[in-house]
Image (cartoon, rainbow, N blue to C red; front, side, top):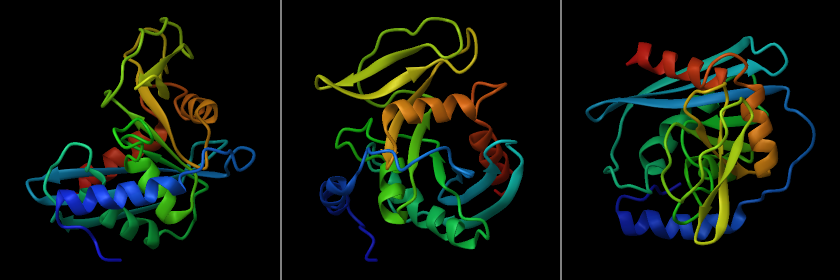
Length: 213
């Protein structure tokens, strides 16, 4: 595909593709969930995908791709720095994931088309965004127990949820990406975070791309 090189071109792509986002759940629990992450050293990057078996959270596959980003850092257009290398890493897998767990946003985005939605639409794989910080919207503070949530609201629309994955720890910002509803995205995030704040998918991908870089 012809990859955008300017912010205006990238915004036009987001506006075009966001109409393809589907928030209908495809079915039951996935068999394999993949964590995706990218780390940078200047313009150098390493994009990692780690696939875990859903029930045991044991690793079954991994791929990491080194590269150089050619798109500038523009808030709201981060996907255009990361998607090409992440797609390359996904192509190297021998186990196809049934769920993509992105360290970023889904529809909790000014144009409702963050990294998770972008990757989901391009690959056709159900996807969710699980971010450490909020990018857009306002919310109440969720209660302290694990599983507590609060709505993330932008322009009077619920675009995500603030989710407490462990008792008393900082919450995560969860949004649907593609082919997943928000309630299912929340349930998936909690399943993948049995012991720590971050999902095991995210923790594994983060370690892999840091080591590679």
